[in-house]
Image (cartoon, rainbow, N blue to C red; front, side):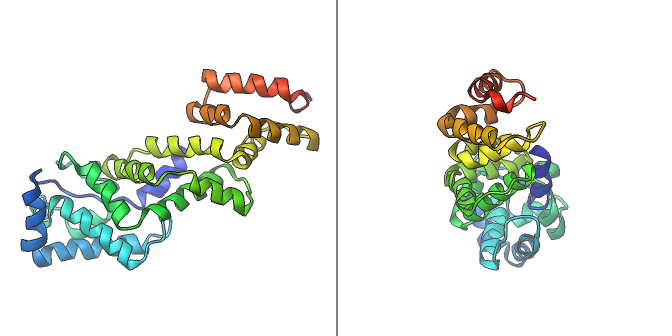
Length: 247
C-alpha cells in the first residue's frame, strides 16, 4: 500500500521556504508582497488543477489551497531562498526543500484543507487507491462505505503531515482501519489473497466471519505482517472456516 500512496502523493505535494514563525509574517505576505506572491500562487494553482493522478480540484479549490500554502511562509522568503514559483509548485514536500516552517504549520495546513473544501476529494482518492492496490471489485454501496469511513478531520490532519514531510504512515493507518468498517471490502481483500480458488461455501464462510468480527479484522489490517493480532485472526478464521484452509 505504501508504494501506491507514495506515487500518488509525489504528484500532489508542494514545497515552500520558511521565514519567521509569528503571525505578522503571514499578514505581511498578503499585504506587501503583491505580485511576487501572485506568481507563486498562480504556479501552484496550475500544478494542482492539472494533476491527473491526484484528487480532481476545480480552480477555486486549487487557488484557495495554493494561497494558503504561500501565505504559510511568505513569497519573500521563497524568493530569498532562491526557490522559483515552478520549483515551489512541483516540489514533493516541504521537507525536500529543507526549509524552516512555523511551529503551527501542520495545524494551519490541516485547517486550509478543510476551509478550501479539499477533504472530500482526498477521501475519494484514499478510497480509490485502497481498492486499486488490491485489485478488488466492490459494489457501489461498499465504495461509499469506504469513503465515508474516513473522518474529515483525521483525513485533513493526515494529509497535512504528508505535505510537510512526505510521510504516509497516518494515511495508511486510516486506510487499513477502515477495512473493519466495511466488511465487504475486508472480505474481498482476504479472498484476493487466498493461495487457491475457494468453494462458494468457503467464501461465504469467510464473509460471514468478517461480518461478525469487524473490529478484529480492522486491528489485524492496521498492525499487519506477523503481528499478534494478525496471527490470532488467522487462527480464529481457520477454526471457523476449515473448508477455506484445506486443499
